[in-house]
Length: 403
Image (cartoon, rainbow, N blue to C red):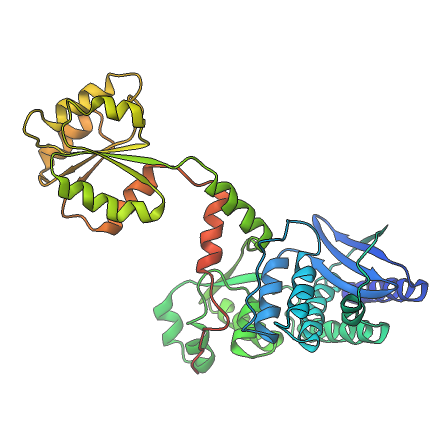
Protein backbone atom coordinates (compact mmCIF):
# COMPACT_ATOMS: atom_id res chain seq x y z
CA UNK A 1 0.00 0.00 0.00
CA UNK A 2 1.45 3.36 -1.04
CA UNK A 3 2.13 6.19 1.39
CA UNK A 4 -0.52 8.34 -0.24
CA UNK A 5 -3.12 5.57 0.12
CA UNK A 6 -2.27 5.28 3.81
CA UNK A 7 -2.47 9.05 4.23
CA UNK A 8 -5.80 9.14 2.42
CA UNK A 9 -7.28 6.33 4.52
CA UNK A 10 -6.09 7.90 7.78
CA UNK A 11 -7.51 11.28 6.90
CA UNK A 12 -10.76 9.87 5.54
CA UNK A 13 -11.33 7.78 8.68
CA UNK A 14 -10.55 10.72 10.96
CA UNK A 15 -12.90 13.04 9.08
CA UNK A 16 -15.63 10.40 9.23
CA UNK A 17 -15.27 10.02 13.02
CA UNK A 18 -15.37 13.79 13.55
CA UNK A 19 -18.49 14.00 11.39
CA UNK A 20 -20.26 11.16 13.15
CA UNK A 21 -19.55 12.56 16.61
CA UNK A 22 -20.62 16.04 15.49
CA UNK A 23 -17.87 17.63 17.57
CA UNK A 24 -16.61 21.21 17.53
CA UNK A 25 -12.90 22.00 17.65
CA UNK A 26 -9.62 21.86 15.79
CA UNK A 27 -7.92 18.83 14.29
CA UNK A 28 -4.15 19.28 13.97
CA UNK A 29 -2.49 16.99 11.44
CA UNK A 30 1.31 17.07 11.41
CA UNK A 31 4.26 15.63 9.52
CA UNK A 32 7.75 16.63 10.61
CA UNK A 33 7.78 20.40 11.12
CA UNK A 34 4.65 20.95 9.04
CA UNK A 35 1.18 21.31 10.51
CA UNK A 36 -2.29 21.64 9.06
CA UNK A 37 -5.35 22.78 11.00
CA UNK A 38 -8.88 21.61 10.22
CA UNK A 39 -11.60 23.52 12.08
CA UNK A 40 -14.98 21.89 12.70
CA UNK A 41 -18.38 23.06 13.90
CA UNK A 42 -20.79 20.28 14.90
CA UNK A 43 -18.81 17.82 12.77
CA UNK A 44 -18.91 19.96 9.64
CA UNK A 45 -15.77 21.54 8.19
CA UNK A 46 -15.47 25.22 9.01
CA UNK A 47 -12.05 25.97 7.52
CA UNK A 48 -8.74 24.31 6.53
CA UNK A 49 -5.39 25.99 6.94
CA UNK A 50 -1.69 25.45 7.61
CA UNK A 51 1.18 23.98 5.65
CA UNK A 52 3.93 25.94 3.93
CA UNK A 53 1.90 28.53 2.05
CA UNK A 54 -1.40 29.24 3.77
CA UNK A 55 -1.43 32.93 2.74
CA UNK A 56 -0.47 32.23 -0.87
CA UNK A 57 -3.21 29.60 -0.97
CA UNK A 58 -5.73 32.13 0.35
CA UNK A 59 -4.85 34.76 -2.27
CA UNK A 60 -4.97 32.16 -5.04
CA UNK A 61 -8.45 30.97 -4.02
CA UNK A 62 -9.71 34.55 -3.72
CA UNK A 63 -8.38 35.39 -7.17
CA UNK A 64 -9.96 32.29 -8.66
CA UNK A 65 -13.49 32.74 -7.35
CA UNK A 66 -13.92 36.48 -6.74
CA UNK A 67 -11.03 38.42 -8.32
CA UNK A 68 -12.63 41.80 -7.66
CA UNK A 69 -12.87 41.24 -3.90
CA UNK A 70 -10.81 43.86 -2.05
CA UNK A 71 -10.70 42.89 1.60
CA UNK A 72 -9.83 45.22 4.48
CA UNK A 73 -7.96 44.06 7.59
CA UNK A 74 -7.88 47.26 9.65
CA UNK A 75 -9.98 45.77 12.42
CA UNK A 76 -8.42 42.31 12.29
CA UNK A 77 -5.78 41.07 14.70
CA UNK A 78 -3.32 38.34 13.83
CA UNK A 79 -5.22 35.39 15.24
CA UNK A 80 -6.35 32.05 13.93
CA UNK A 81 -9.09 31.93 11.30
CA UNK A 82 -8.43 35.47 10.02
CA UNK A 83 -9.17 34.22 6.48
CA UNK A 84 -12.52 32.83 7.52
CA UNK A 85 -13.45 35.99 9.42
CA UNK A 86 -12.68 38.08 6.34
CA UNK A 87 -15.03 35.88 4.31
CA UNK A 88 -17.79 36.30 6.88
CA UNK A 89 -17.36 40.07 6.85
CA UNK A 90 -17.39 40.14 3.05
CA UNK A 91 -20.65 38.19 2.95
CA UNK A 92 -22.33 40.40 5.54
CA UNK A 93 -21.30 43.50 3.55
CA UNK A 94 -22.47 41.96 0.25
CA UNK A 95 -18.97 42.07 -1.25
CA UNK A 96 -19.13 38.40 -2.21
CA UNK A 97 -21.90 35.83 -2.40
CA UNK A 98 -22.34 32.78 -0.23
CA UNK A 99 -21.65 30.61 -3.27
CA UNK A 100 -18.34 32.37 -3.90
CA UNK A 101 -17.32 31.98 -0.27
CA UNK A 102 -18.09 28.27 -0.28
CA UNK A 103 -16.13 27.83 -3.52
CA UNK A 104 -13.16 29.51 -1.85
CA UNK A 105 -13.42 27.20 1.15
CA UNK A 106 -13.62 24.11 -1.07
CA UNK A 107 -10.59 25.15 -3.12
CA UNK A 108 -8.53 25.82 -0.01
CA UNK A 109 -9.64 22.57 1.62
CA UNK A 110 -8.72 20.57 -1.49
CA UNK A 111 -5.16 21.93 -1.49
CA UNK A 112 -4.82 21.26 2.25
CA UNK A 113 -6.14 17.70 1.85
CA UNK A 114 -3.75 17.18 -1.08
CA UNK A 115 -0.79 18.26 1.07
CA UNK A 116 -1.86 16.01 3.95
CA UNK A 117 -2.40 12.80 1.98
CA UNK A 118 0.88 13.24 0.11
CA UNK A 119 2.86 12.83 3.35
CA UNK A 120 4.29 9.40 4.26
CA UNK A 121 3.47 9.62 7.96
CA UNK A 122 1.01 11.70 9.94
CA UNK A 123 0.18 12.47 13.55
CA UNK A 124 -3.25 13.72 14.61
CA UNK A 125 -4.33 15.74 17.65
CA UNK A 126 -7.81 16.92 18.55
CA UNK A 127 -8.37 20.20 20.43
CA UNK A 128 -11.92 21.03 21.57
CA UNK A 129 -12.65 24.69 20.80
CA UNK A 130 -15.55 27.06 20.50
CA UNK A 131 -16.30 28.50 17.07
CA UNK A 132 -18.84 31.09 15.92
CA UNK A 133 -22.24 29.61 15.11
CA UNK A 134 -23.96 32.53 13.41
CA UNK A 135 -26.33 31.98 10.51
CA UNK A 136 -23.54 32.92 8.10
CA UNK A 137 -21.17 30.44 9.72
CA UNK A 138 -23.74 27.67 9.53
CA UNK A 139 -24.37 28.43 5.87
CA UNK A 140 -20.66 28.24 5.04
CA UNK A 141 -20.03 24.83 6.61
CA UNK A 142 -18.95 21.98 4.36
CA UNK A 143 -21.15 18.95 5.00
CA UNK A 144 -19.94 15.38 5.34
CA UNK A 145 -20.79 14.75 1.68
CA UNK A 146 -18.97 17.90 0.56
CA UNK A 147 -15.93 16.97 2.64
CA UNK A 148 -15.89 13.55 0.98
CA UNK A 149 -16.11 15.13 -2.48
CA UNK A 150 -13.23 17.51 -1.77
CA UNK A 151 -11.09 14.72 -0.33
CA UNK A 152 -11.80 12.50 -3.34
CA UNK A 153 -10.81 15.31 -5.69
CA UNK A 154 -7.55 15.87 -3.82
CA UNK A 155 -6.75 12.15 -3.97
CA UNK A 156 -7.49 12.10 -7.70
CA UNK A 157 -4.91 14.82 -8.33
CA UNK A 158 -2.29 13.13 -6.17
CA UNK A 159 -2.91 9.74 -7.80
CA UNK A 160 -2.50 11.30 -11.26
CA UNK A 161 0.86 12.75 -10.23
CA UNK A 162 1.98 9.36 -9.02
CA UNK A 163 0.85 7.60 -12.19
CA UNK A 164 2.88 10.09 -14.24
CA UNK A 165 5.95 9.50 -12.07
CA UNK A 166 5.75 13.01 -10.63
CA UNK A 167 5.31 12.10 -6.99
CA UNK A 168 8.53 13.97 -6.11
CA UNK A 169 7.34 17.28 -7.61
CA UNK A 170 6.20 19.59 -4.82
CA UNK A 171 3.50 22.04 -6.06
CA UNK A 172 4.66 24.52 -3.40
CA UNK A 173 8.09 24.75 -5.07
CA UNK A 174 9.05 27.48 -7.53
CA UNK A 175 10.54 26.81 -10.98
CA UNK A 176 13.47 29.07 -11.91
CA UNK A 177 14.93 29.50 -15.39
CA UNK A 178 18.57 28.50 -15.78
CA UNK A 179 19.07 30.09 -19.20
CA UNK A 180 16.29 32.14 -20.82
CA UNK A 181 17.76 31.97 -24.32
CA UNK A 182 18.16 28.22 -24.12
CA UNK A 183 14.61 27.84 -22.83
CA UNK A 184 13.06 29.96 -25.60
CA UNK A 185 15.08 28.27 -28.33
CA UNK A 186 13.99 24.81 -27.21
CA UNK A 187 11.88 23.06 -29.86
CA UNK A 188 10.05 20.75 -27.50
CA UNK A 189 6.94 22.02 -25.69
CA UNK A 190 7.47 25.36 -27.45
CA UNK A 191 3.91 26.63 -26.88
CA UNK A 192 4.09 25.83 -23.20
CA UNK A 193 7.55 27.35 -22.83
CA UNK A 194 6.63 30.58 -24.59
CA UNK A 195 3.70 31.01 -22.21
CA UNK A 196 5.30 29.84 -18.98
CA UNK A 197 8.41 31.95 -19.62
CA UNK A 198 6.32 35.03 -18.79
CA UNK A 199 5.34 33.52 -15.43
CA UNK A 200 8.67 32.26 -14.12
CA UNK A 201 9.62 35.19 -11.90
CA UNK A 202 11.38 33.21 -9.13
CA UNK A 203 8.36 33.68 -6.86
CA UNK A 204 5.37 31.86 -8.38
CA UNK A 205 4.85 28.30 -7.28
CA UNK A 206 3.63 25.44 -9.46
CA UNK A 207 0.18 25.89 -7.90
CA UNK A 208 0.24 29.54 -8.98
CA UNK A 209 1.36 28.76 -12.51
CA UNK A 210 -1.32 26.10 -12.97
CA UNK A 211 -3.97 28.62 -11.93
CA UNK A 212 -2.66 31.39 -14.17
CA UNK A 213 -2.30 29.12 -17.19
CA UNK A 214 -5.72 27.54 -16.54
CA UNK A 215 -4.15 24.10 -16.77
CA UNK A 216 -4.32 21.11 -14.47
CA UNK A 217 -1.64 20.75 -11.82
CA UNK A 218 -0.59 17.43 -13.35
CA UNK A 219 -0.17 18.89 -16.84
CA UNK A 220 1.91 21.81 -15.61
CA UNK A 221 4.02 19.58 -13.38
CA UNK A 222 4.70 17.21 -16.30
CA UNK A 223 5.84 20.03 -18.59
CA UNK A 224 8.01 21.61 -15.91
CA UNK A 225 9.56 18.24 -15.06
CA UNK A 226 10.49 17.80 -18.72
CA UNK A 227 12.11 21.24 -18.62
CA UNK A 228 14.04 20.27 -15.51
CA UNK A 229 15.27 17.07 -17.16
CA UNK A 230 16.64 19.15 -20.05
CA UNK A 231 18.35 21.49 -17.55
CA UNK A 232 16.21 24.43 -18.64
CA UNK A 233 14.90 25.11 -15.13
CA UNK A 234 15.43 24.06 -11.55
CA UNK A 235 13.11 24.07 -8.53
CA UNK A 236 13.59 26.00 -5.29
CA UNK A 237 11.60 26.52 -2.11
CA UNK A 238 10.13 29.96 -1.35
CA UNK A 239 8.67 31.48 1.77
CA UNK A 240 4.99 32.17 2.27
CA UNK A 241 3.71 35.71 1.92
CA UNK A 242 2.97 37.69 5.05
CA UNK A 243 -0.64 37.34 6.13
CA UNK A 244 -2.69 40.56 5.88
CA UNK A 245 -2.94 40.89 9.69
CA UNK A 246 0.84 40.44 10.07
CA UNK A 247 1.46 42.89 7.25
CA UNK A 248 -0.81 45.42 8.96
CA UNK A 249 1.00 44.91 12.28
CA UNK A 250 4.42 45.51 10.73
CA UNK A 251 3.22 48.61 8.92
CA UNK A 252 1.81 49.88 12.21
CA UNK A 253 5.13 49.23 13.96
CA UNK A 254 6.98 51.02 11.17
CA UNK A 255 4.64 54.01 11.36
CA UNK A 256 5.29 54.33 15.08
CA UNK A 257 9.03 54.60 14.56
CA UNK A 258 10.60 58.04 15.08
CA UNK A 259 10.79 59.93 11.79
CA UNK A 260 14.24 59.60 10.27
CA UNK A 261 16.03 62.92 9.75
CA UNK A 262 18.23 63.72 6.78
CA UNK A 263 20.52 66.76 7.04
CA UNK A 264 21.73 68.67 4.00
CA UNK A 265 24.75 70.96 4.45
CA UNK A 266 24.88 73.03 1.27
CA UNK A 267 24.94 76.76 0.63
CA UNK A 268 22.50 76.39 -2.28
CA UNK A 269 18.80 76.45 -1.38
CA UNK A 270 18.09 74.58 -4.64
CA UNK A 271 19.84 71.46 -3.37
CA UNK A 272 17.86 71.54 -0.13
CA UNK A 273 14.59 71.93 -2.03
CA UNK A 274 15.58 69.09 -4.34
CA UNK A 275 16.12 66.71 -1.41
CA UNK A 276 12.90 67.81 0.30
CA UNK A 277 10.82 67.08 -2.79
CA UNK A 278 12.33 63.62 -3.04
CA UNK A 279 12.51 62.53 0.60
CA UNK A 280 9.62 64.20 2.44
CA UNK A 281 6.92 62.21 0.58
CA UNK A 282 8.75 59.05 1.68
CA UNK A 283 8.43 60.00 5.35
CA UNK A 284 11.84 61.56 5.96
CA UNK A 285 12.40 64.89 7.66
CA UNK A 286 14.91 67.11 5.81
CA UNK A 287 16.96 69.73 7.67
CA UNK A 288 18.74 72.16 5.34
CA UNK A 289 21.79 74.00 6.69
CA UNK A 290 23.18 76.65 4.32
CA UNK A 291 25.87 78.02 6.63
CA UNK A 292 27.97 75.09 7.89
CA UNK A 293 29.59 77.10 10.69
CA UNK A 294 26.51 78.81 12.13
CA UNK A 295 24.43 75.72 11.45
CA UNK A 296 26.37 73.29 13.63
CA UNK A 297 24.04 73.99 16.56
CA UNK A 298 21.03 73.12 14.38
CA UNK A 299 22.84 69.96 13.30
CA UNK A 300 23.32 68.94 16.93
CA UNK A 301 19.67 69.66 17.74
CA UNK A 302 18.34 67.58 14.85
CA UNK A 303 20.71 64.62 15.38
CA UNK A 304 20.30 63.44 11.77
CA UNK A 305 20.38 59.82 10.69
CA UNK A 306 22.26 60.79 7.52
CA UNK A 307 24.16 63.90 6.38
CA UNK A 308 24.44 65.05 2.77
CA UNK A 309 27.46 67.34 2.56
CA UNK A 310 28.49 69.72 -0.22
CA UNK A 311 32.16 69.69 -1.16
CA UNK A 312 32.70 73.33 -2.23
CA UNK A 313 31.19 76.09 -0.05
CA UNK A 314 32.14 79.80 0.39
CA UNK A 315 33.51 79.77 3.95
CA UNK A 316 34.75 76.24 4.48
CA UNK A 317 35.22 73.07 2.42
CA UNK A 318 33.20 69.93 2.85
CA UNK A 319 36.41 68.05 3.63
CA UNK A 320 36.97 70.24 6.69
CA UNK A 321 33.39 69.79 7.89
CA UNK A 322 33.55 66.03 7.41
CA UNK A 323 36.84 65.78 9.28
CA UNK A 324 35.42 67.87 12.13
CA UNK A 325 32.24 65.75 12.37
CA UNK A 326 34.23 62.53 12.44
CA UNK A 327 36.20 63.84 15.43
CA UNK A 328 33.07 64.63 17.47
CA UNK A 329 31.39 62.01 19.61
CA UNK A 330 27.88 62.83 18.37
CA UNK A 331 28.63 62.43 14.66
CA UNK A 332 31.55 60.02 14.51
CA UNK A 333 29.26 57.19 13.37
CA UNK A 334 26.64 59.19 11.45
CA UNK A 335 26.60 58.27 7.72
CA UNK A 336 28.00 61.14 5.64
CA UNK A 337 27.47 61.28 1.88
CA UNK A 338 29.18 63.95 -0.21
CA UNK A 339 26.82 65.56 -2.71
CA UNK A 340 28.98 67.54 -5.11
CA UNK A 341 29.15 68.87 -8.64
CA UNK A 342 32.74 67.59 -8.77
CA UNK A 343 33.09 63.93 -9.59
CA UNK A 344 36.79 63.22 -10.01
CA UNK A 345 38.59 60.14 -8.72
CA UNK A 346 40.78 62.32 -6.49
CA UNK A 347 37.73 63.91 -4.86
CA UNK A 348 36.15 60.53 -4.22
CA UNK A 349 39.35 59.07 -2.80
CA UNK A 350 39.96 62.02 -0.47
CA UNK A 351 36.35 61.93 0.72
CA UNK A 352 36.73 58.28 1.65
CA UNK A 353 40.01 58.88 3.44
CA UNK A 354 38.52 61.52 5.75
CA UNK A 355 35.58 59.30 6.69
CA UNK A 356 32.76 59.83 4.19
CA UNK A 357 30.54 56.80 3.60
CA UNK A 358 29.60 57.58 0.01
CA UNK A 359 29.88 60.13 -2.79
CA UNK A 360 27.13 61.35 -5.10
CA UNK A 361 27.26 63.74 -8.01
CA UNK A 362 24.62 66.51 -7.94
CA UNK A 363 23.44 65.32 -11.32
CA UNK A 364 22.40 61.98 -9.79
CA UNK A 365 18.80 60.92 -10.33
CA UNK A 366 16.15 61.02 -7.61
CA UNK A 367 16.13 57.22 -7.65
CA UNK A 368 19.84 57.14 -6.86
CA UNK A 369 19.39 59.54 -3.94
CA UNK A 370 16.60 57.41 -2.50
CA UNK A 371 18.75 54.30 -2.97
CA UNK A 372 21.62 55.85 -1.00
CA UNK A 373 19.30 56.98 1.80
CA UNK A 374 17.79 53.49 2.05
CA UNK A 375 21.28 52.01 2.15
CA UNK A 376 22.47 54.04 5.14
CA UNK A 377 19.27 54.77 7.05
CA UNK A 378 18.11 51.39 8.29
CA UNK A 379 14.49 52.26 9.09
CA UNK A 380 13.04 48.86 8.20
CA UNK A 381 13.25 45.50 9.86
CA UNK A 382 14.02 42.47 7.77
CA UNK A 383 10.40 41.38 7.92
CA UNK A 384 9.16 44.73 6.70
CA UNK A 385 11.02 44.15 3.43
CA UNK A 386 8.71 41.18 2.94
CA UNK A 387 5.81 43.60 2.91
CA UNK A 388 7.28 45.26 -0.15
CA UNK A 389 7.72 41.83 -1.70
CA UNK A 390 4.06 41.10 -1.05
CA UNK A 391 3.06 44.47 -2.53
CA UNK A 392 5.10 43.75 -5.66
CA UNK A 393 3.81 40.20 -5.95
CA UNK A 394 1.81 39.45 -9.03
CA UNK A 395 -1.80 40.55 -9.16
CA UNK A 396 -3.93 37.67 -10.36
CA UNK A 397 -6.72 40.00 -11.46
CA UNK A 398 -4.54 42.09 -13.76
CA UNK A 399 -2.24 39.51 -15.30
CA UNK A 400 -2.97 38.53 -18.90
CA UNK A 401 -1.30 35.36 -20.11
CA UNK A 402 -0.83 35.23 -23.86
CA UNK A 403 -0.60 31.94 -25.63
